[in-house]
Image (cartoon, rainbow, N blue to C red; front, side):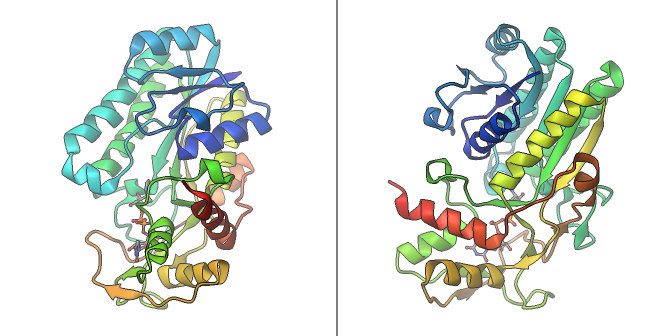
Length: 319
Ligand code: WQD
C-alpha cells in the first residue's frame, strides 16, 4: 500500500507526507522542485525529482517503489496568475494530470486521490456549500481543478479506477515553522507582511451583505487538511469509491474576525485600511463538511487561533 505524492515537497504536500507517516502509510515523493523544497521531504522518504509529465521517470518510480496509489498535488495554484496565463494552467494542471493518469493506467495503479479546490464553485449561489452545490468556476485555475475531477470520473467509468477529490477551502497555518507556506498570496501572510513593514493591513471591502460587511470564508488548518488526505487514502485502500469531498471546518469567519484573531495572537494593535472590493471575490461561502465526517470519519480539530498562532511563529522565524 505505497502512495506516490506528486508535489510532496510543497507546503501542503510536506504536511501530508508527515500525516501519512503518522497513519502508517508508506510514501514516495515525486516533485520537480519548481516551487517545492527538497528539505521539506524527510531524509528517510524516497524522493524522485521529476515532473508529472515526464512519463519515463514517473513510470519507473511507480514500478521501483511498488506504488499502489497516487496522490496528485503537483499543480499551479494562483487564481490571479491563471487569469493572466491561462495556457500555462491548462498545460501544467490539465496536461500534467492527463500524462500522470496515463502513467497510472500503464503501470496498473488503480487509486488516485486528487487535490481539488473550492474554486470549482466560483461564486456559489448559497453560503453553505455542499458537494451537490452546482459548480461554476470563475477562473482558469478553478476550471483546471474541475477538469481534473472529470478526468478521474471518466477514467473510473472506463477502467474501474478508485478515486477521490478533496475540495480545499481556505488553507492556513503550519505544523512546523520550517514547513510554513513561503508565498505571500493569502490573507494571513499578507496581514503579517503589512504588520512587519509597519503598514496597515488592507481590508478588501467592508460593504458586503454579511454580519460585519467583510467577506466570509472557511479557514482550515493545513495539519487538519493533511489528516483528511490520510483518511481518504486509507479509504481508497479499503473500498472502490469515486467521490468528491469538501474539506473545511464548516464554519464561516469574516475577514474582520481574522484581523481580530491576529491582534490577539500577535499582541499588535493595528487599524486596517479599507480599500475597494477585490474583483471576483464572492461575499460568503463555507463548507458543509458533513459528508467527509460521515464517510471518512474526519473532522477538523484545530481552530483559527491555532492557524494564526502557528503561522505567526513561523513568520517570525523566517530567513
Ligand atoms: C481571503 C479573504 C479577501 C487579503 C483563494 C482562492 C481559492 C483557494 C484559497 C486555492 C477574501 C480578503 C485578503 C488582504 C483582504 N485557493 N483579503 N485583505 O480569495 O478566499 O481564496 O485562496 O485553491 O481558490 O481563490 O483567499 O486569502 O486571498 O482571501 O481583505 O490583504 O480575505 O477579499 O475575502 P480567497 P484570500
